[in-house]
Amino acid sequence: MKILQLLCVPLYGTGSGTYVRKLSEALTKDGHQVAIVSPDNRELKKIKLYEVKLPFMATFLGQPEHPEAKLYSRLSGEELNDVQAAFESTIIKAVEDFRPDVIHVHHAANLSWIANYIKAVYQIHFIITSHNTDVINAILDKRYIPLTRDALNRADVVTAVSKNTKERLLKILGKKMPKLKSKTRVISCGVDTKFFPMQGSVEMANEKFGLKGKKVVLYSGRVNAVKGVSVLIKAAQSFPDVQFVVMGDGDDLPAMKELAKSLKLTNVQFSGYLGSNDQDLMRQLYRRADIVAVPSTVVEGVPLSALEAMSSGALVIASNIGGIPTAISHMRNGILVKPKSVSSLTEAIKFSYENPKKMKKMVTKAHNDVKTKFDWKVIAVKFERAYKVAYNRSINNRSTKKPSFVSEEEYIESKEYVKHKIKL
Image (cartoon, rainbow, N blue to C red; front, side, top):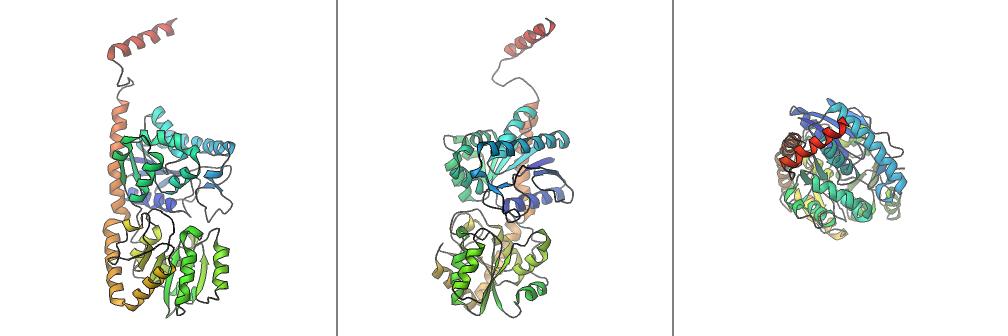
């Protein structure tokens, strides 16, 4: 099957970018042909890329590689129109050149509007995946709701990255759309378990951050208030012998550094954003960590950092919020804590280090779970089923130009009328 992926943000620096890259790689391994439309030009093996040259970079919640990026929810009408024009031009070029069997839109937002148009004009059906940030965008900016609702209504299949994201999608964008619930299913993000192995060298991470012989707690993700980084830094006060590493960038990075400094913490260090050129160091940090903390304070999907940690052999301690419980079962394959609670996070870290056997048992269970439930090979199979639904419907739709609600007599009569007018 030929699958065209549509992504309105770059392929690196965001969870949805990683989602599209890794899903596409898994699909090509299964024999599918995949192309991606995105404002990115970094080549991917066996995947065709159509780069969108935007007038400026736009994103939903920030982009570490593009700190100057504007937020979709804050674009003026003219700016949004310019962005749409750039995407539409490139998407139509991709459709004409690649000739996809089905289109997969990532984010229930502006690109779904274009996919809806493509379906009408080219009769190529599409599915939509909500990554949660699109729902947040709709909450912040109601301009995205009417056209997105129409696209969701005409999509063949809709997926959400977690149960919580599905519930929010239906609440915000599914009002007065009873059929949306029945065609919306949860397909979580995944992880490349071979790319994040439990075994491997950690020398680079030890040397870079002075971790040799130390206990290590890692945070990986955007550094901003809603991710709970301040909660983790405050918890670090109780563990002077544990090294805390904050891996990532974001608007609140200076404030978090200042917080650590004000608390006179010498056991907290910041690596900054580790991009496509620092993948080995990033993977080593995951393997080197005893614990990966995911102290989110607001709802989100299943964080990639949690899955990457589970694959790498680190214990995940995460907030009991949003889509996190989709992957983490309390005291079975990780520990769930109360959001925004320094004491709850502190107690969980303390318990883990004081109970190494229990900690090891949870890590082993987490590694097994991520291989059987969240490996991209497993995720790809779920999407293949969704693509088949859309593709089969598109084939049926192309079999005739006659609308289903029009009688054969009316259709023939209209054809004769047009034929007569052409002769005149």
